[in-house]
Image (cartoon, rainbow, N blue to C red):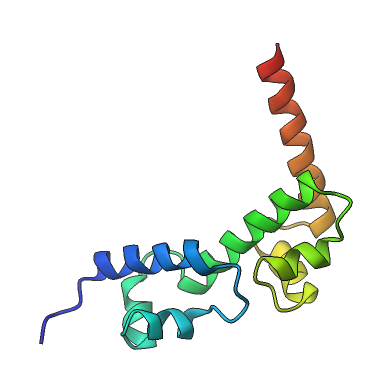
Length: 123
């Protein structure tokens, strides 16, 4: 039996996350099944790196905050569900965990950064 190439497994997992992060059913167990490895093997491929769950959470979080900044008229709970969060509470908790701020503050900071970038490129 061929030994697992963890670098290759990690790259394949990251590609799957980018393709499927919008689906709320996608999580570490789903990714392991899709990659035909055990959850333990998948976790071992990420030793010394952020975990699979953290990478997935940060990918979803980045997208929800960006879309919310561009579409402030759409409730953040709707955007969060659209990008893979089963509940708004999960999104809110991950916002506090990874960004150390509320969802609204994260969106407002992104809007501010977009405005600053626009002013810089316009000058």
